[in-house]
Structures are given as C-alpha cells and as structure tokens.
Image 1 (cartoon, helix red, strand yellow):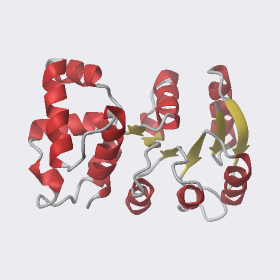
Image 2: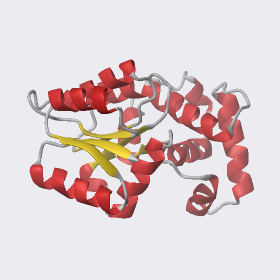
Image 3: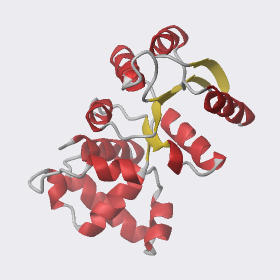
Length: 215
C-alpha cells in the first residue's frame, strides 16, 4: 500500500515513516510543505494520504486545503488527517463529498502504533477513522430539527462508535449489549437517515458522512 505523508516536523515525519515501513507500507513520498504535497498527490496517486493540517508556507490550513484540492481532482482519494486541532469548516468540507475514505485523528490522542496503523488501513479501505473529540466538536452545533435529531440517545451512541470505525461486534462489547441489539440500532439509523438498503459497509460510511456533514 503506497502512502504520501505530509508533516513539517522532521522528527515526527521520520518517526511516522519508520512506523509505516515497519508495517509494510510503501512510502511514495514524505513531504514537509503544501506545494510538495500537492505535487506528490497529483503525480504519485497514492493509495492513501496521511496529512498534517498546518503546513508551510502558511502554517494555517495548508494540508487540509491540499487534501480538498486532491479529492476534487481524484474523487474518493483516502485521506487521514493528523492534527493538533479540529478545523471545523474544512473538516466538514472534507467530509462533504460522501466518498468515504476519511479519517481525522488528534496527534496527542494517538496512544500506540496499532491504533494509528489500524486507522490508516481503515481509511485506505474506504472507511472512516474519527477521533471522538473531533466528532464531538463537529456535532456541537447540530440542530435537533435535522434527521439526526430523530436518533435516540442510544442510537447516537452507536453512531459515534460507528464514526470511530468500530464494527458491530466491537460496538456491542463497548456498550455491553448483544450484537443483535446493535444491528437493530444500525438498521434504525439507516432508516432515519434515509439510506436505502445496499451493501452494509457502504451504508455505514454514508451514515457516518451524513451524520458528520450536517450542521
């Protein structure tokens, strides 16, 4: 699996490269600025991009802007964002096209290699990997009049765990309920969000994107 990595801090970039290579990822490019990231994504067409939000030259939202541009030119490009902050406006825009393959992790809340590598693989496969704090901030101003307002507290809990990329088995273990109960909750969620019957994994991604992108 080929990865383009964008991180401006040398030690962190080097550490991420070594970690990914240790798990058999191929580093197509490891860059430190927005222009380099734009060029690498356009020319190398990686399987997944791992992107810091704040890159030179602006040190504001350069990484996210490059990711948005790349996804417009190559719809569905899997992008995992690593950041110290939640950039709400651009995070919502990144989620808005509904193609899946999106992750947003906060750097100081990635606690081990397995957690990070699992997120990269999940996003590369077209799934989602969202930090709970990111989800909380993106949902902080949600209106109860939206379709998500129809979700029960239990369904919202299931929805947040789905957004983290958890399977029904993992959700059941976390909530201490049966897998059948989780399946019933997810079915209700799909119905309330107006998602037609289709491949379950695809509906999970669409549900997460619909849930996070409104507001």
